[in-house]
Amino acid sequence: MAMAVFRREGRRLLPSIAARPIAAAPSPISSDREEGPLGVRSISTQVVRNRMKSVKNIQKITKAMKMVAASKLRAVQGRAENSRGLWQPFTALLGDNPSIDVKKSVVVTLSSDKGLCGGINSTVVKVSRALYKLNAGPEKDVKFVIVGEKAKAIMFRDSKNDISLTVTELNKNPLNYAQVSVLADDILKNVEFDALRIVYNKFHSVVAFLPTVATVLSPEIIEKESEVGGKLGELDSYEIEGGETKGEILQNLAEFQFSCVMFNAVLENACSEMGARMSAMDSSSRNAGEMLDRLTLTYNRTRQASITTELIEIISGASALEAAK
Image 1 (spheres, rainbow, N blue to C red):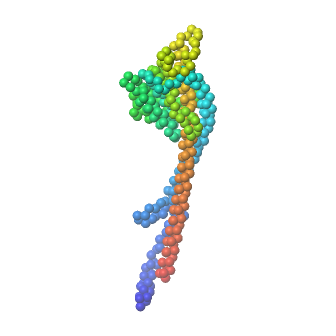
Image 2 (image 1 turned 180 degrees about the vertical axis):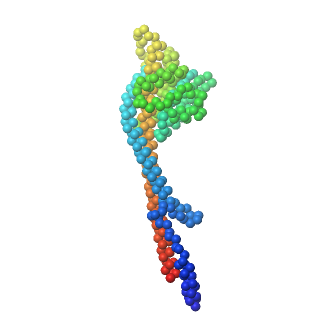
Image 3 (image 1 turned 90 degrees about the horizontal axis):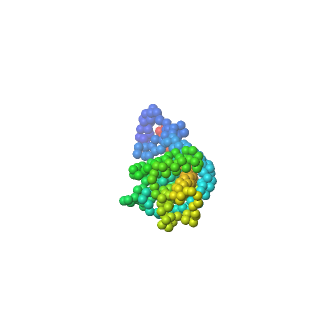
């Protein structure tokens, strides 16, 4: 009796069911967006594809930047190694005493003009600030000379009044001794100092660089330390001949020493910058590859889920039509 009633009700409802148009479920092949039920998180395959395309483009850029940095590093590394022979004789002659106590100190901070090179710029800034704290005092004057755009941007935030000179775009043209000697001459003319402390990154390898401080004393301090028996290397073992006085010779030696130390420091810092950029771009390329793998997995899972949902809806609709007949 119950089954007969059910059949009669089914025949009565069949015309109304057949008259209603059955909406086709969106196909994952023709449409790139899957709509989930209310409150369920859904994802668009088009969004994932756009993200994958962006990551691929970024990976191409980082790989290209790595190759450019590698070629620049090869061009500068040999010159940096050869320039070490310029300042080493001065260190043996005049010494290098970074802990000397003077009244007027100038900290020369060497950095890069561009970023994407790891922490080499923040490292030299930290060392420069530490030197400032060590040499500052009630009767002492400490000033900064900034070479490079990145250190300038950082130091201007809290040490603007202590900066005497800034130089940018030094690496715009290929570095040579004449260019660096002009920079050294400008520094000597614009600042008064008893000791110049050059802070830079010394190149060891592509993945290793060491923050280094080189000290250049003024001729007056050199002569004073020589008289009191300070640490000045082998200067006192030489005799002065000719018409020039000891002060004039020390003046020439100090200027030439500073230009040679600056030349080596600029080249060493450029090598460290290129090596750090190579490492940073290599890490970025690997991270982009890993992100691309995750996005590919997400894209495939989303497509499989949408296809499965489509098949389930088609089968369910066909079953409902079969049951309604």
